[in-house]
Length: 457
Image (cartoon, rainbow, N blue to C red):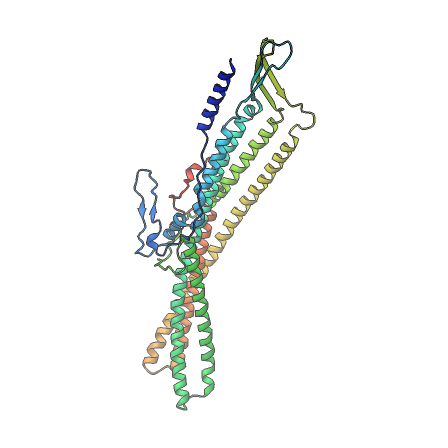
């Protein structure tokens, strides 16, 4: 081979190598916020379970149920916008593991300067790392498992965001009801204070009769202020969750009951196969098992096999195999093996702890739900009695058999009983939602990351 041909071949190889390389394109960061000023500007299209079916669109003009609010949070939450990039990064890791290292090529050309030689010398070699081929299967399998683990973790993030959206919707609806009842209570107290002051000014009542009413009024005003602040905080949290300006408001409907089977034993038993965070931990543990196997196989010393050939200055040609390998005297991959085994033990303990926490929390929430349900029934009965007494007191007042102060006491007591009912109902709704997520049930199936892709580790 002449020198010119060698240079042409090298140039051609370089051109072909560069043709397959990626190119750089600048991607500047955003220079303004992306918050929306109206609910209609959000992504309202809920993907259907069937790939060929058209997505269902949420009507922003109607009151949204907590489940619809949770779905909108999944579709529009700013923190979830990075999910595609996280999946792409996991896919890139998988791609990296599926690619074998390039063969090593060496070329040495020496010009004859002096001596008995008759020509320039040339030496060429090509070799391939063998250990990367031996560990290829374990590496690729571990990367595939980790891709599924990332998908499961992203699905759990979606569930958490949906749960937060549903809880905020429940709280906002309850805050609004509570604010109405407390405002009505304050209105009654203001009327009573006005009448007592008029009676005091006319000399029909002592000035001390106003003191307990003023104290009750101050308490009612403080409670209203607290409820308004809580409502404002809940709205701002929900707007941030949906990617809206903090001043956006929309109608929220009453919470729909969470449907759970009477016997929760099968749901609790099947938690490891259904709840995305537990699925992700199982996948992570499986990947750690493969890492241990890969580390043990990695005890095989670095080993390259190839072919070398060429001619010397006397133009004597030769060719033959080449072997390069490490001598496993000092490093036999023991550090990597120890680290992989320790990581496996840690992940196993983490999975056991999360599983125990999930089962314990599910049983605790179930007990809390039962107690709250019992208290709610008692509160409803007490509220009905108080309302009946208030109605009777109103009729007695209209007939002149009861004073204004006594009527106000009956009416405010009835309103306080209504607040008790609202409080227990809110607690019951929150507990039911928390129980549904602990059991991995009661959520829409149309999530951004399909559960079917991650529940078969």
